Image (cartoon, rainbow, N blue to C red; front, side):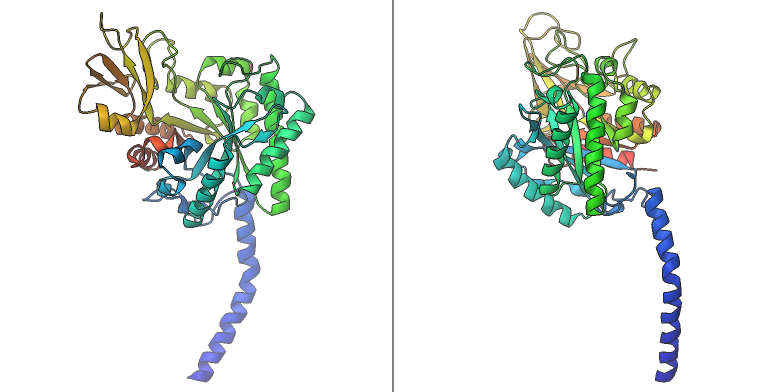
Length: 406
């Protein structure tokens, strides 16, 4: 019996030695094509474990479920460890900034460093989860124009941004320039050449990430956030951005808000005539040559609360006295039971009306509609701004489960 077992063991060992080169060739093929031989697909619980290990070689795999985690969430007691990472594949950390020399810097280092440690711990619990350091946003885009202005500044930005990424254990960078050429926060630097320079900046960052990735034996990700409106598309050619990026995060929100004179839908799926909508924004980017597999549709986890002076009609299309953003958790805890709910079949967005106030927001039904649109268009994934506004993951789980359903 023992002698027969030994002969069997030797035969099995000999077979395995012969098979190793074949198996190795299959693995190399899988890496070269960006495919997984295990065919991760869309797992029932939509966890990040369906993805290859963080930073592995090859192209990004669908489905992507991304979300922004802002630095200030820690001040409200919502820590990286509180994130429902089982529903996420990518976390964008918001935000690093750009200093007056055009270099990437941490704007809130004490909070950032604590959050970075929390994100690294979260990745240990979810090995497939990927994290990206986002640079810019509404508050920190002032000096992007300088950073993109010439080869020296572009190289300095690329090196410092990639250095922060590597130092703090991120898997990539996300650029959120709000906005090239015009717009954004008052005081932002602008140049007529911003649109072309943005393409060159992304190329410089891509080259820097590829060089560091080659040295580290891995691939670093590069993404960029883009708005759905015509103004941005008129200033920046989107298809070249997609060539350098792993994906573009379409900010499918703020199509209307407190900066307008009248109440409007903040994130309408569809709208009449030439009015802005998420569907129109997606179709425009696809028509301009952005591949659907390079586009991630971002949805809002917040709405806008409008208050009126008390005279005249109060609601959509009405002038308002004041307005403020309200997260989904606040909507459900403070306003949902007090207001009268309506739902627009065209916009696929709910509203609440109360005594002297009106709220435009998103809920699971509207989030699901947007996820279905992304699925219908063959997009790479869906994402959200921002995760601390939905602490029980009611919207996030709907977003992930709807998009990842077959």
